[in-house]
Every structure is written in structure tokens, then in C-alpha cells.
Amino acid sequence: MHVLVTADTVGGVWTYARELVTGLARRGVQVTLVSFGDIPTHTQTEWMDGLKGLDYRPTAFRLEWMQEAEQDIQASSDYLLEVMEDTRPDLLHINQFCYGALPVSIPKIVVAHSDVLSWWVAVKDEDPREVEWLRWYREAVSTGLGSATAVVAPSRWMLNQIERHYGTPAQGSVIYNGRSPALFNPHVSKDDCVLSVGRVWDPGKQARLLTQFDPPLPIYIVGTDEHADAALRTGTSIAEVDKAGIHYKGPQSEGQLRHLYGRAAMYAATSRYEPFGLAPLEAALSRCAIVANDIPTFHELWGQTAYYFRQNDAQSLADAVDRLHRDRELRLTYANLAYNRARQRYTADRMVEDYMALYKTLVPAGLVAA
Image (cartoon, rainbow, N blue to C red; front, side, top):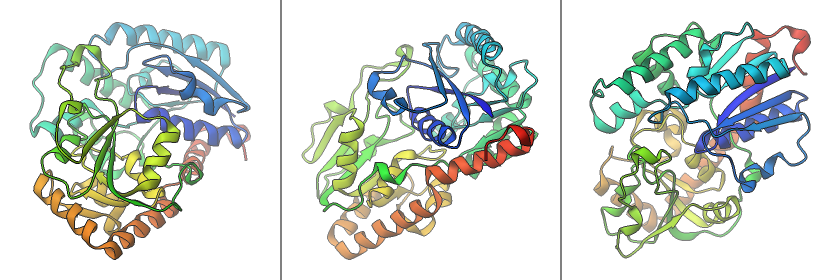
């Protein structure tokens, strides 16, 4: 079987694509991977070394959620059609919405990782104003979803958002994301500190919540503070926050992140908008206690294995961190609960098997690897 996978290199979709493509290739599936956004660094592509059956084609086309993307989307769609003509895949696994509208006869799976409308409502508590770019975006997303053979979301909450803003897909399902436990270390001694990882510039991640109280222990905030779309950069920086106990680390390598996750006693999942949340999963696989914002996605994913603070409330977050800091046994209990849930439900192997099962319903049986 031959699958063409699209991805982008500027966010969590790249991590997701790594786990998916690696798992597919190890199961004997031939993969053509096409990426958009920035051309990746060598560090971002090291995982491909020695991976059999992978044909990787990087591009720098703009992503559909970026301003001034319309021309690039047309050009990148034409490019994808050329790649398909060249490689003849049996199925498209698309991690952007707009390419669901490609005029091809093979099955098309569109994965709804996140979208502008649901992000806006969650962050702004209001519907966005109808401007020309947003009308184009809404039409592009709706057309892509409506033309897809199947639509997948990483949580039930995200699938509900897709139905709310763009209509019910012909075939919609939930496949939870997964990570490889071997990439993380849950067996080292913990330091009394809190870690938070993500797009620091993104108010949906709400990292600034951690700067609104005096922490009883060090807090480390990791991630880029520069918007991926140059047209939307504001010039303000969380790195400028001068408060004792708050340490902004900036972007970190995979090895550095593994170390930070391994040493952190707690992970602060502060997001107010979160279709899934790979960083909390990585923290759980590192045996961190998860202190989570009280939003529907985190309840869906983590149930009673996370310690919740009142929604978007900095003082409640401060109280939760202080409680787990003072009560070591409670903190260890939540760390083990999150670790066990992650190992049971959110591994890369389980995710890939779920996608393989979906492929089998869409592609003739003789083309699907065992």
C-alpha cells in the first residue's frame, strides 16, 4: 500500500506526522510525505534516517491559516497533483483542510488538528468578524471537509467543533494522537519545579497565566515566542516578564525537552483552546503530575488522572500548584495516574493501528499491509 501524507513543519502536526509515518513505514506501508510551511532543519528530519519506504518532499508553501495564503494554496494544490501523478498513491492522508478538495479519485482522509474559527471562539469568547480573508478560509475549509472521503479529529470535542462551524462530515471519527513512550524518561528523580511547553505567542496556549502569580517553586516555560506567520507578529514577548521564579527557556531540542520533562515534578496544561495537546501527553509519559485547565478536552482525555484548576483562573492555578508542591504523595499519585493512562491509551502504536484499520475500510484489501 502507498499513502501520501501531508504535514507542516511549524507546529505539533510535524510531531504527529513523525509518529504516523514511522509507524506506517515499519508496517510495510510505502509513504510519500509532503511538508508545507518552513523547510525543516536537519534536526527536524533526523528521524527519517534509515527509514525504509519513505519518499520525503519538503516545500515552503504557506499554510491555509496564514494571511495571504490563497495564492500559495492554489500553487501547492497543483504541486500535490503533480506528486500524485508521479507517485500514484492509493490513499491521501491530509493534515490540512483545503487539500480535501483535490480532484482525485482515490480515498482522501482529512485530519482536523485545529482550525481558526474554533480557536477564535475559545480564545475570544465571540465569533470572528467576517472579513475577506476569513470568508475565503471558511469556504476553503468547508469545501475540503465536504469533499473528503473521511474526516478524523484527535478528540470528540474537536470533531464537535468541526460539525458546529463547517457542517457534519459524511464520515467522521475520532482517533486520539499518540507518542512513543521510548522517547521519554519516566524513571529519573524529580526536581521541585513546574514545566509548560508550547507556542508561547499563542493566547490559546495561555502560557501567560503562569506569570500572573508568585510561584512557590521554579516555573520553566518552553517554546517559541514568535508567531509562525510574520504578518501577525506583535513584537511583545513573554521573555520580557521579570518575575522571580519564572524562567523562559525558548525553543528546546528534543534531547533538552526529554531532560526537562524527566526532571519536572509537575506539568502545567494551561491551554484554553486544545484540540488534543501533545505536550501534556509527553509530560505524562515522563511521569509528571498534570495540572490542567478545566476545559472539555482535558476532561475527555485525562478524566480523573489530572489535577484541575478553575477554568482560565490564575489564582486557582496557583492554588493547585501549591497544593501538589506541599503534598508530595498526592503529586506522586497524580503523576502515576497520568503515566498509566498515557501508556494505556495514547501510544503511537495504538494511533497507527487505528489509522491502519481506517485505511482498510477505504482501500481494497490487497493493497493494505498486514
